[in-house]
Length: 148
Image (cartoon, rainbow, N blue to C red; front, side, top):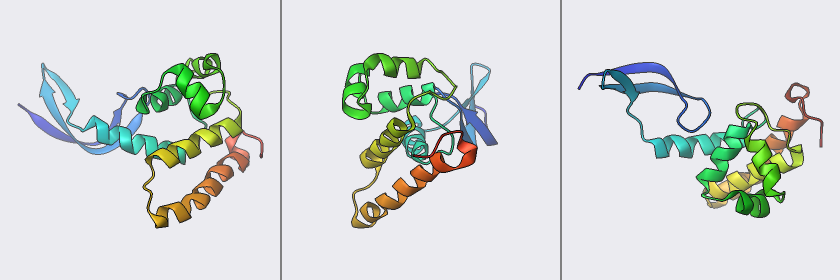
């Protein structure tokens, strides 16, 4: 089986583009495919969404919900405290930013951090700093969001 290394590779297997570096590729049925651990990519992607500077997209919301193995209703009720139809509408935004309220997005990002962050004393003491960083994303003039 032929293989090669690609310096920069855009992986879209999670529903939205993720830039990977130094990816080993293998040729299978005359097509090149990345040789990656999809679970590791998903784990890194979910953590990166917490401090992503751009607003979350519909495909990212769908990824978040599926990452935590939740139905629309469960995600709506337990995480964002909205109707399942609102969540469905956000997900239908595709690669465009959702129009969810910024406070709901902050709650969602904090939920992700709480679920995937390690529970060491050091990380818990940095939780407030992460919250402040998330808050600044929405307060910066370039974000297009209004200040909380």
